[in-house]
Amino acid sequence: MKRSVRRGLGFAAGLLVVVAAALYVWLAPPAHERETLFTGGTILTMAEGGVAEALLVRDGRIVAVGSRAAVETQASHGTHRVDLEGRTLMPGLIEPHTHPLATALLGSAIDVSGFRYGSRAEVMNALRQGLDQWQPGAWSLAFGWDPVLVPDLDPPTLAELDALSPDRPLVILSQMMHDAYANSAALRVAGIDDSSPNPPAGELGRDADGHLNGTLRELGAIGLLFAAMPPPPEGSIDLLLNLQLGGYARAGYTTIGVAGPVGRAKDPVGILKARLSAPDAPLQGVIYALPTQTVASATPESPLVPGGVVGVKFWMDGSPYTGGAAFAAPYADTALTRDRLHLHAGHMGALAISEQDFAAAFEDFHRRGFQIAVHAQGERAVDRVLDTAERVLAATPRADHRHRLEHNALITEAQLRRAKALGFTTSFFIDHIYYYGDRLPDLIGPDPMGRYMPLKTAIEAGHHVSIHGDHPATPIGPFRSFATAVLRKTRDSGTLVGDGQQLTRLEALRAMTTEPAWQLGLDKDRGSLEPGKAADLVLLSDNPLTVPDTDLRDIAVLGTWIAGQRVDSRKATAANAGLLWHMLISFL
Ligand SMILES: [Zn+2]
Image (cartoon, rainbow, N blue to C red):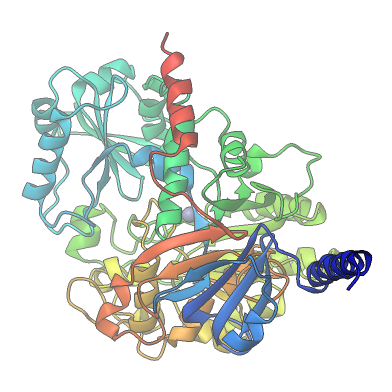
């Protein structure tokens, strides 16, 4: 063969290789930098199909979910593969009603709660030990004093409080935040003495001789103490809040609804927005602001805006454990209600807002397009909300408003049907049953126990039903709430509360994923694993649909993803280091 021919053939072969390579690159799926393929475990989609073998995520969105064979054909060659090692992947949990600022701030107080301690001796010991340790600020604060859960918890005397902390101001806040106990130093700094009159909406406890006894009742009185406390160090609230957001992530949540930003901070909504919209935030969230935290012309933000204010929060009654719930019947007359809660025989909880004030506020926020969430435990509270809503909606109809009834301890079947017809949705504080279920008959009598927190009735009435933890009212623990929704057993005696109101496991999981997503206005984007939705995920040690009943509460969370990115929920993140640094330099 001539040299020139050989050279020509070589050139052609070379060209062929280049063309083939170009064709291969052109025909093959492109390599995506941000593409992840999850296989090797159980994938609960919470959508049609239920269980899948494989999930493909690209640029934060779900591209395909289904059988391994079908999903793998859509993966590009360079896809990042995650082996689930037999564990369970599902949509990131959604907590529709929680208070992250209050949880963060009270989380730094001495814990004396009935969730941890079972007797007065244990509580007093926890106080002594806590006071020996360093606390931020010049005051000592303890949180969680709970005379309902701790049977022998008589109020501390002023002498006991002064012995615990002779010089430094000490305040103990009750679990329901309606009572506080202050030592003499705290009363002195707050300017309260034997001659002080009761403040509006509050009461200063006194002994038989009229001397202060250290007990302060209701917000008007407790507020005098908190107003006297020096503000927390600059920047410390940002750091505590960001640590708290990581705490939600470690529990398996990827989205929360802030149901009223309560907590001691100059600008609670601003601080929440700043942390929730940080690019490396470990959690997503929307906010229901207090009416006083909005300006007159404001309109709601989209729930897709990080930290968006989507709604407002009202309280129509109080807590069942203080005498504050506006039930239809009087509280039971028992040793618990008389001696611990100081209620008179025949006590009825009061409605928190007058009919006229609520109607005016409801109409205003409804007209402006806000979602309205109302705390309502008793039947009378639910009636006031629905009566008002019925009138306003007749004059100003608004499709798909999704106004919310919160907690719903004794909402009736008729009220649930009426609420559904008016377009309301319900979220239940299910862990009342777990923690307080054994004490409830002493508060409300035995009769209404069968319909306490009626989740099944709500589902049968056609409601989207979610469950929430209302932290810091209970400790964060989504699978404890899940177990309670399924089993409805009390913590102390294992008594079944409300037979027939148990949810199936699938219903209970929907109450933590698809249903709260709908309530927060995020159903098109989150809550289930379907193509096009955000890849918000949680990895679990066990499949909640199949583990034995006894293990439901112990399902462990192994990690979360937001928009396909693994969440770093450690305490020592760069973000927390930055916030710590910011706080430290503010001291200089
Ligand atoms: Zn709440």
